[in-house]
Amino acid sequence: MNASLHNEDFFKGINRLADRSIDVIISDPPYGLGKDYGNNSDHLHGADYVEFSRRWLDAVLPKLKDSGSLYVFLSWQNSPEVFSLFKTRMLMVNEIIWDRRVPSMGGSTRKFSSVHDNIGVFVKSKDYYFDLDSVRIPYDAETKKARTRSIFVGKKWLEMGYNPKDVWSVTRLHSQDPERANHPTQKPLEIVERMVLAGCPPGGHVLDPFMGSGTTAVAALMHGRSVTGFELNPDYFAEARRRVDALQPPAPASASASTLRKSRAAAAGRARAIAALPLPQD
Image (cartoon, rainbow, N blue to C red; front, side, top):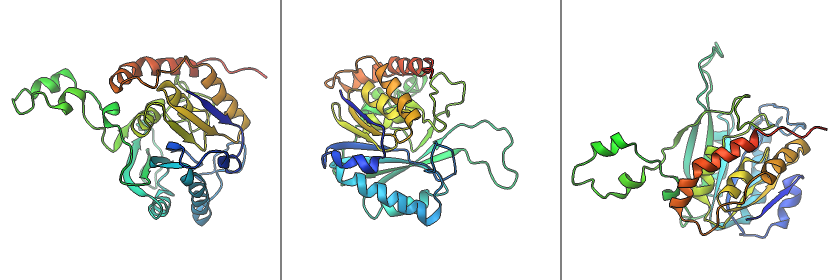
């Protein structure tokens, strides 16, 4: 599979992609919370942030196949307005709550602590690709044993696992995490893998317009998908390139969903080891 990574503003490079060539877009744009990404990209608020979101949606939407889907990470501050905007252009099929499993350590005394991100899932048409079997969560032996009544025997959902719910409890990447790369808002590989597997067929094409440290690229290549990514910050781009270059050859595009599921634990371990490699020195 191919990784086409670009150290440039995606607004300038996106038109090199053919229309209707992308199976899934995984977008983690600046949240508008004033973080330092080496530029002023995270300093938009209110109507300006909504306009920025409209611009990047208008840029990527023609590149998405009619069967394609779009996942977008946002914070609660802007997700209501942005989701409302996106719903005028696409069908919204889920709002996923990422519970970051932040430990209780004080926090604000004037409001409840914020411990989640919002993930919007949008599609271009009702005939969209979604591979549930590739992301089912297996039942433990005790649960399967408890469902021994005849009406349950042989049920696919019991044998293969259940559909992930729309609250994903996945621990954020703390500074000592072996998966941690050189990026302040890096998303866990486990979350992005689920998006790639569910939203993109084997051998398909993933687009990440705000690539950061390259987690989407790593997830796509690990599972036999091609990926195109854009990242403006040269340091983050170098980190993404390092992680991609360190990957072993990906699983073949013809691998079955069950084979991919069996390989996920080993693949995630490889990715964590890659992330732990020392950064190149200047």
